[in-house]
Length: 260
Image 1 (cartoon, rainbow, N blue to C red):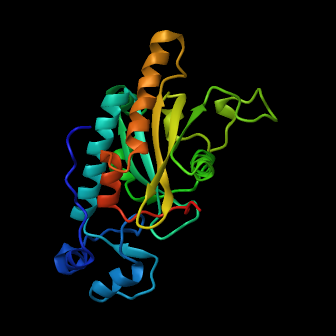
Image 2: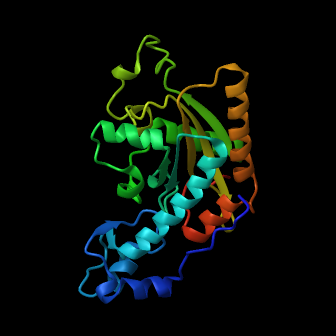
C-alpha cells in the first residue's frame, strides 16, 4: 500500500474533552482497544462514577476508528483477492488472550449471500470494538507467534477433520462457537496471521489479521494466487515501518502477550 494512512490517534487530553457534554453518545461500549481506563473516562464524564467496566465514548470517535480500519482492510482485500479480511486486536492493558473485534470487510458475493439469508447483522458496522471469546484459531495463532517470536501465518481448512479423535466430523457437527461467521459465509479456507509489534520497549503479540477464501487452493493458478496473498501478508507483518504496523500504532493502544 503506497498511500500512507493519516493518523487519527488523539491525545488523552483531547479525548477527555470529547467525552464531555453533548459530545458523549447515549450508547456505552466496552473499553476494548481504546486508550483510556474506565476510571479516567468516568472521572471525565459529568455525573459518572469511577470503577465501572464500561466507558462512554463519542459515537463520532468510534465511527472514525471503524472507518479507518475498513479503509486499510479493503486495501488488503484488494491486494490479496480474499473474500473476507478481518482483524482482532487484544484488549488494551491485557496480556492474556482477550480479542476485540476491530474490522471486517467482505466481497460483494459474501454480502449478497448474507442478504439472501435475510441476516440483518452487518459485521463491519455492528461489531466494531466488541469483546469476543478467544476461540481456538485466535489462541493458536497468538501462541505460535509468541513461540516464533515474530509474525506467523497459519492456515485453517474448515473442510478438514475438526478433531483427530473424530476424523469423520463435519462442519454441521461443530459446536455453536466453532460455527463462525467465516464458514457461514461459505468460505472454507483461511490464512491466520499473528501480528507482532514492538510497541514501546517490548514486542507483543497484539492480535490477528485473517484472510478467508472459498476453498484451499487446488491447481497451479489458485496456488500461485495464494502464494501472492501470503507475500502481501508477509510484507505487511515483517516490517516495523509497514502501513499496517504504523496504522495500528497510530490508532490503538496495543495490548496482548509480551514476548520474552
